[in-house]
Image (cartoon, rainbow, N blue to C red; front, side):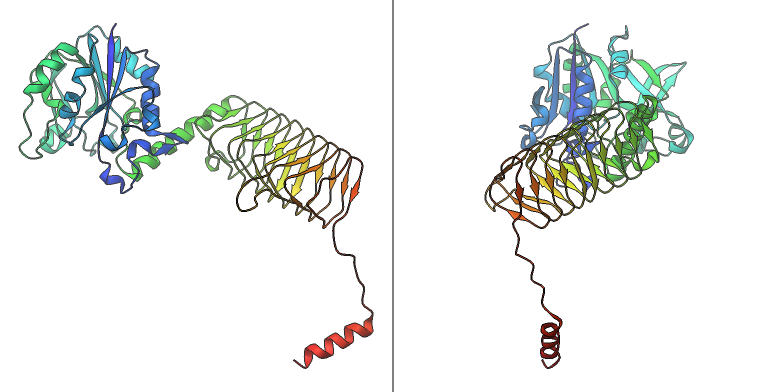
Length: 434
């Protein structure tokens, strides 16, 4: 079947009270609009048209769709009118760009129905009966009309069958009747639902999955969608053998990849682009993103990982350690209170507590390279660019700005001076007289 998709994403998002359009706010690290576009692409449509505003037309989120512009927000029918010239398939499916939980399966069921015209209706649970969705009125089990909530009588508002705003319409009928829709006298807008005053033969596909058609209009709506997606991700990972000690306190990204036998402790946040290998453990209160964690790695507690970092098998990052843009070799460890930035570290190396790689000189970032079997003593400061070769030792408290050769002991600190008791007494006496 030849099908085009039209996604309506031109709303001004006023109820979000945000300078970011609602379509670009993220859920589990993925923009709302990309959930819809990706679901549509799974249906292998002939064309995908996003109707949006001029000021956001060049967004990277629209890189794989055709963009049509609605210059003035005059309602959903007007938005579809802006896309009419792009339609070339026999059928058109129309949906909203703020409905991130809809699946490709829902859309395929609609596309594959034998009816020329159809819509998806959701069954509202009793606790959501008050929600201001349009209601689907049936007569003898067949579609009669859609009544907007604000125009509905009390009897019509009690109908549990609500409009999702997802339609399949024969394209030639769409092009014929969109121009005939009249402006609403109250709002001054053109409503797409008015097309069903002309098209009466409509199949109603009923879905009990209310959550799948949840729209994003407020920050509260966004939070509800985030909670839904996070719970779905938690269930997925636990079903595949990941142990979550306190599931509700762990947050994932849409693209998180985790193997089985991983343990994640409470209050862990996993951002975009994270892979975690089997047997690893993420300790409590850690925040990780943009990193690849191999098998049997320990991270945390209170660790911060970012910036395209990687950790080979058996490596360990301890409490209050931040790692940015660095690579750790097998069994290399930084267990306490360190900052490792823009570094490449070999295997079986130990980074002592309080170690800092000084990677930024105020203008540019510089690399630190540390070899295999290196021991970096506590409270060391490594001023990049610098290379510390294999099997070397850095004395505790050293500040280094020169390379260290292999098998060397490097110490860079003031020589200790012990003052006798007499000198201490003189110093104390002078201090009291000030």
